[in-house]
Image: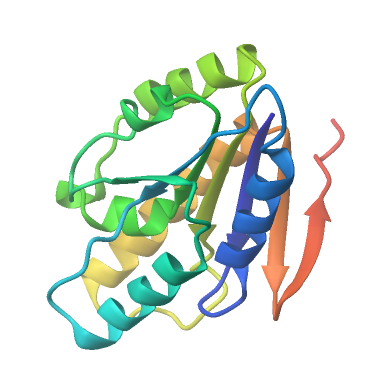
Length: 173
């Protein structure tokens, strides 16, 4: 089961992803590995947000912190349910917002084929204001492309708006 949880800033997407991971963490996947893509240290407000995320995690969850630019593929090899929070923060740490999409999708497909639950949380940036800078537009576009690729591979996509969750149907061909 591969699930993608999308939402804007402060939408509640991380909490939805955490609740989903908790529900999926049943035998034989009792372990939850939380893949944290933000480590903080440079911005007080961002550090406080990270601290809130840490405080919400159950003490028995394993946490893997992914440094900027580090691939997610190793973390996706973890046992049990894997929760990645978030693809947007991970992408922001990649040089030029370039990621090996094929490598990521192959790792996700291996997890999916083995029936091990995976939850990916990502930002939906395409609904907000038009970024002023070239860099902002490049990030928005790269994340939109990444989200589309992951959504195509996902078994289900949830969209979180103002704390409310919509299950997004696949487009019928």
